[in-house]
Length: 447
Image 1 (cartoon, rainbow, N blue to C red):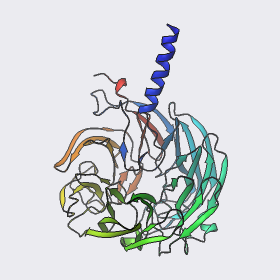
Image 2: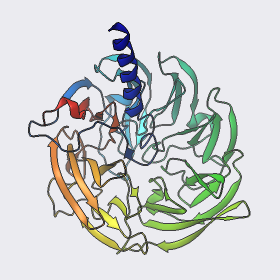
Image 3: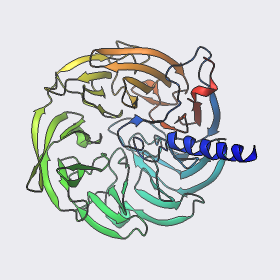
Image 4: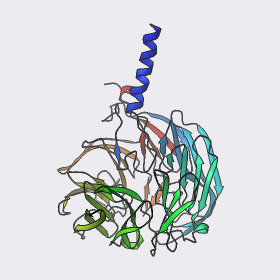
């Protein structure tokens, strides 16, 4: 009997490990806003979703990351200064920027690292970037360019950089928001400064490997790696152009003129097959990746105009075989786009705004697709968690539950502007007061 029980325990452990995902970087384990865990609930039950725990936090746009049973988060404790949240004004704050480690099961704080940091940015309500967890380290980039690499278990500092000091870069008006990319033995960061829009560091020591590109502004778009024709390339989108680089050397393979409004290169390019969709304020295009005898290239398929495409800013884009989905910053609506020609299939403000039909600006919702299905988990700026069926034919809301108070504000309305994480059969989400864990484990609910 004891032997049978032991084998059952071991078997259960491996099964549980096989179906559990971490969310250790921006947009999840596969970097495409897709949630893969098994055994999760796909519709909100009559009794509602359970909040497992709440943990106090301070201001921040930075979403949580989850790895090895721990949640990592950045926030900002303000001492002085006011938030006007005026897009054209740099507010000045003094305070403390923090990296926090929390037990994913209990919500108890394990460690925190903090340092004084003044802010002089627009929308200064805290750090933007999700901490990246890789190989026992946490890579945390603050709103004013402080990159701290910490031991994941203890918070002990391994190495650090100050982009303003080390590279003579100016913090962009909306702060450093491009999530670092850890790939193999390198970390790629959007830095700024002459010849250093992107800098590659040894992820273990912080030693600089190379730097590349100059632009009027480094922008806010996270670096990403794509592979086409057997060749890997690092995609960098800044205020002037979209470029493909050799990730090993920084050599520029190609550059394509794609200038967003107000330097707002924000959304990470989304790849499907050999196609690449890139969109931001005032700029959207679908490209064909090419390979000419091992030399990467790119060719435009179509370019957006004011009546087509989707111009996403805050929320994430989903590019799948049926359509392109995203939240348009002008319409404040979720829009479905025909990938063949960029025409709009449908649009709705229902999963975004508290008052549908208004002319709100920069409406935001964070979309996460469940596996290869039509089911989407959506965290709205209203603080609602929405379950929806989304296809090229339309948007169908299945149900929703209010889970967070909108504690920030923009254009006169309250908002939650922080991407959630999905791991441990749980959704982890935050506002400027607390981090919550919402139970998605289907075995915990009656049927």
